[in-house]
Amino acid sequence: MESAPHSGDDRIVELVTEAGDRAVLVVTADRELRRRVTELGARVTGPRTVRDREPPADRG
Image 1: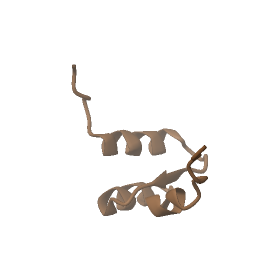
Image 2: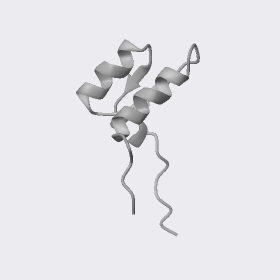
Image 3: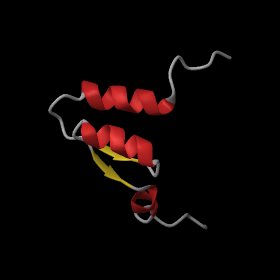
Image 4: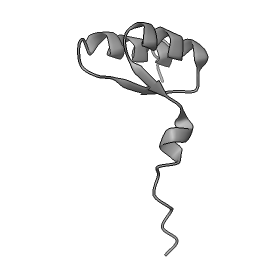
């Protein structure tokens, strides 16, 4: 198995950069990644926001 040429965070930053003027929302708890993407104009929210919106697991 080959490893990725960059870190996952670097790839997220690349995607935000490539988005240009489109609105971007990054979900992360990583403070450094938050800083990097907000400097590029992305909005950021924490994973708890997404987790709290998940539908309950099907127990049937």
